[in-house]
Image 1 (cartoon, rainbow, N blue to C red):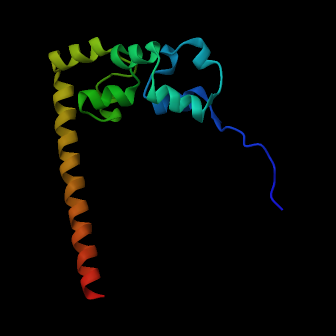
Image 2 (tube, rainbow, N blue to C red; image 1 turned 180 degrees about the vertical axis):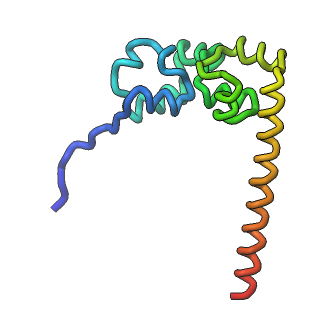
Length: 135
């Protein structure tokens, strides 16, 4: 016998939805911050973002993961550089233009980390291929 339960929509906290939308929650409108967001609402926001969401994505303030990505550093690198708050697009561009020593250092670190990750991945792929060849 099949159940005739109504399918309920999954909801998430505004913080989770903001993370998925890559926006800074405190800058979102109150109606977004104060309620739950359904999966359908999240999909609608992603496919057809309202003006407030477009403005937030364009001008900020941006959450730290977005700031770090735009500057080409890690979130830890931002913290080491003293950046602990959300930044606007204008502030990010100013930092890029200024190119302080900590930012140069963190970008170099990020390049080294990416090279090392690529080396490790290649090593594992070679080991897996050798193992497969033996089998």
